[in-house]
Image (cartoon, rainbow, N blue to C red):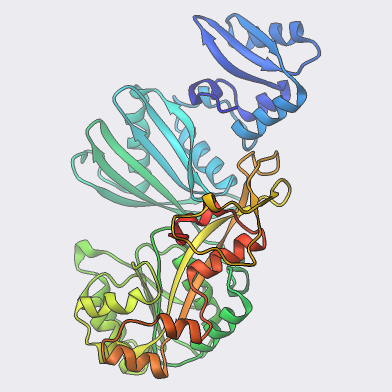
Length: 464
């Protein structure tokens, strides 16, 4: 069902659905199509006129053709990609197509014998186009011009930003250029300016977790820290929080890299380390701007950590992110950075770890009995876990078995007994978590398996 990209792009999605035909092989000058048409001879003649070459048609069932189309042509496009390699519109077509199907990133990559374009959809990369090697340089230069990057510089990494405005949408794109042995790899991150869909209630918090989190953000001082790997949804959670806190009587300042969403009423600053505008120095300036709430994109070093602590101690609410594997590991990370444990205990309001998991398609998932071999070795199966749901794939989910994503959280409020443990550098808290009924990432993952929201495969790494 998965066909080579170079064959797929011979026709666009609109043509594929119209003719109910998909190219599956090329032998010399002959292109072989599969189709469920009732009149293969007529289709053959029409395709021969379009391609100007010999066409062969292999009859397929309507069910299989629909599956071919659903897997390989996820959305309708308005132009033949084969004709767009040689003009500027090709790049814009790629960007708009990626945004249309919900892609977060576009990867342009060049190798010894080919160049390609991949889209990241629901956290997974999907190959969409093969680009002629001779055209890759033109596309790279076009992106550099739009992003305000140096066209002549191909030896060093560069960053840029593209703003695209049409009659129907307005969005920004963060661009990163990376020199490789065959040319520059380019990644475009699509930044959506629309914040209407961002709300704390629909991110993935359980009712109990949402209540705890809402209480923590009502405090007027202290630090709220979110941890997790890149792409785990931390920034979206922060923006949903800022949106909730954004009132006319609050002065909110943010320092970000990049500014992913724009929020009316919030003063947002773009990080520019090349001119000395880094997290720590900007935080220092923020304290002279009479802020109520400060958001720091990421705590990367001890200087930023210390400034965040200082801001919290002087009566400000600070929100930020940090790269750790769990909510409790965040405390160890801060102390390892050189922040005294008593300051961590007195300023950290709440520590949160989060991950994004794909949700099973509700149209095609199937229930099966639990088999021990599906889980990691030495994993203790809950007694009430008897069945699980498996990804299958259908037309609605483009035969991936999944549709959309949700965040899962691990939330640890820092107060009382736990604050004392931190002050005294006592980091064994398994009993505390159990006695206070705190849901870990692993426990929440098991609940999602039990209620059929996601699959074992999707949360396997959290069960290790």
